[in-house]
Length: 407
Image (cartoon, rainbow, N blue to C red; front, side, top):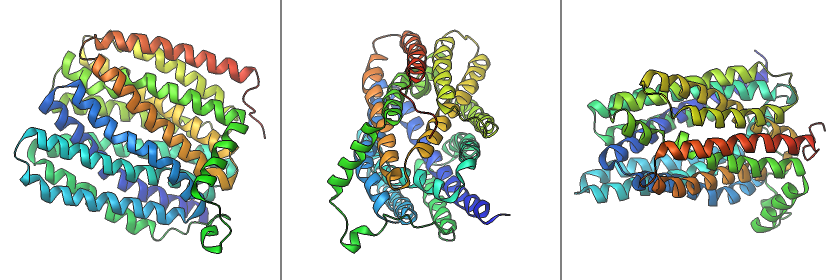
């Protein structure tokens, strides 16, 4: 095996193991809150606490990822999440009522979101340093497929342990997998980028100055600027069909953990297939064409999801959702990796993560409470139509040369 392939395999394996534990815990918390409260407001509050901190910290994390060792950042973030999750396990017996438990789960979700905000830009910036540029789309496709396969198993695992074990036991899974993932990552040699360590050498500017430079860089690149803008709208409009799917299932089908697990399994099965499809497009240079088609296809499926009366039909559509979701994510990630200069990767992916972690809680804050007073099906139809319009509009902007697809 080539040296770069070995290093990439170890790196992706460490992240997959860590992701498995995080995913099991995330599903367990969301399902626990959904089943205990059956409230769109509570689910929205939980989701906001899971993503809003990530939005804020990603701005700083992007700068840190360009200044310091990205490998050490990933390890530090995983360690922080594991420590606080373990602390919650010991505190759970002290919560006497549902309100206190909900507050604690929102608190740990907040902390886990901070850790994710630190880790995500660093991980995205590490991959281009380990992979030849011509192999980026293929590796990103395989990475998406691996992560989806891991998350495919996570809902089943979460549903199983929640059926037979207390929530505290589920939380410990994340602690164990974090330790294993960190152990593997320690053996991966990650090249040091040229701007790492400038803080110690006395050549660095302030964090805020570097952050400003990152904003200026993105604003000066029309392709990066418009991709981030359209991506934010895409995530916001995905909320009713994707991020409120557990609420949809409990209202229109069943609140059983089996049903909740089934919809997640279908989605991640589709994401696994989507990653393999993207890996096969390694020679296709038009990332934005794929990205725009994916957004429009997402909108069509959002509308179609409101029609099935039979749960198996709904699952098939959710699997198709998973395929398109991975296509959009992989195309946009690869585009940014290819079009961003190396010393700006951390800041650009910090902004990319911030767009996601702002758009999602904003969407939950809007659509979650609305779902308690307006038909969730109607919200899915309206947002789906808007996604189709966004896909076509983004493609027209690409055609009018806002996107420079060739270096």
